[in-house]
Structure formats: structure tokens, C-alpha cells
Amino acid sequence: MSDNGKLNDRIIAREGKQDYLARVEAPRKRVPVLLASPEAKRLFARFFDSMQLHTNFISNIARSRLSSDDIEQVEALIAHNISQSLIDMDKALADAEALCKANHISEFAEYAQDPLDEHVGVISSLSRQYLDLIVRFDQVMPMLATLEIDGLVRKRELDARIAQCKKLVKRIAYSTRELANGVRRRMNQMAEDVALPKEAAGTNIEMPRPIKKQLFPNGDSMTLKVNDQFEPKDKDDLSKGSTPDSMSVVLTSPN
Image 1 (tube, rainbow, N blue to C red):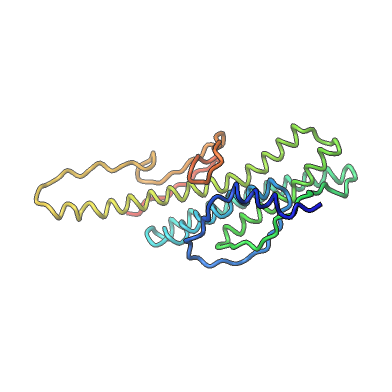
Image 2 (image 1 turned 90 degrees about the vertical axis):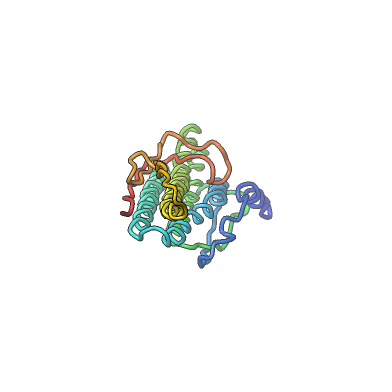
């Protein structure tokens, strides 16, 4: 029996705590999305628009302050991370499908609750690819559930496979947030550097130049490293916590 969208309403109310794109001026293309599993619905509600907010900051706002080469390098890294996660998710999907075929399973478990059927506002190619990743995660969920129901995998293995697939979705959102924070720190540092000569010109007293804060360990370059063994425990938006992905990016500071 249909639940008349009650589960969807609960998920949106709990996970979608704020409208991240309320003040974003970028145009949006409405893309139809159908998600059946509660796990995929929660990931979508919690991470999708937040990730879009960070990519909008990098691609549109920061581009007016920083060099295009630096911004394109960050965008390329995000695209690479999404592409790698799509490859890993497709492998998980293919493995589950192969195991079902090997055991002559042609019908998969279904969810009694109504699917989340919406037209989602997508503002960039990066967020479009990220949405594809969430949709593929939703496709693998009923296959994994079927394998456990038919006794082909243990509950522990099922949980491990689901956790690994969730991690592929989460780490993109976390790493994109960290990259956006790094770009924001670079912008703030540049603003401080511009303000220092103006402050010195306004007085005849020769003041010592303050020591520049080191934003990153290597000084002149921006280095972002993320530890794969740590994942935030909180369930709030992406303004908290740290990144669970392992990656590094170096952006050379403009001369």
C-alpha cells in the first residue's frame, strides 16, 4: 500500500534542513529524478544542494577574484573525483547484478513507500554528474537487498557493501566543501595583502608588516589533503566536520 509520500516528507524535513540555493543566481535546468530507496533519498536530501552551493562558489564567485587557471584546476579535480566514484559505483552495480544472474534471480526487492519523484534544479555539469552518482546508488540498493533476502550474502556483508557505496557519494560532497573552503581562504588572504599597503599609506609612522598567516603547510602553494580514515560523525550540513576522502591538490599562488 502507498504511504502517500509520508516517508519522503519525513526525510526531507529531517535531512533537508535549509535551502542552500535560495540566494544562488545561477540558472537551473529541471532534471527528472526518481529515487526508490530511503538511503538514496537521504543522501540526496542531505548532500546534493549543499554540494551545488560549493561548486557555484568555486565556479562563479571565486572566479572573479582568482585566476582562471586556479579555478579550472579545482573544477578538474572535482570532476575527476566524481568520475572515479562513478567507476567504483558501476563496479558495485555490476558485481551485484552478476551475482543475481549467477543465482537465476530476475526479480528484485521492492520498496512499499512511494518513490521520490521530482524535477530537480541542476546548476552545473559537476552537479549533474553528482546526481547521476546518487541515482546509480539507488539502483544498486534493491539488488543488494535481494541478495540478503535470498540468503546469498550475510547481513554483515550487505552492510559493508552499502556502507562502501554510501561513502562514494559522501566523499564527493565533503571534498568539494574542503576545496571551496581552501579557495575562500585564498581569497581572504589576497584581500589582506591588498589592504596592507593602503593602511601603511594612511600614517607617517613606519609600522612593521604583520607576519602572514600560513594557510597551508607549504606556504606559497595551496595544498589540500584529506584523510580517508576519518569521517564526520555529525548529521548536520556540510559546514561542519571534515572530509573522509583521500586526495591532494596543489594550487600555485599567483605572483
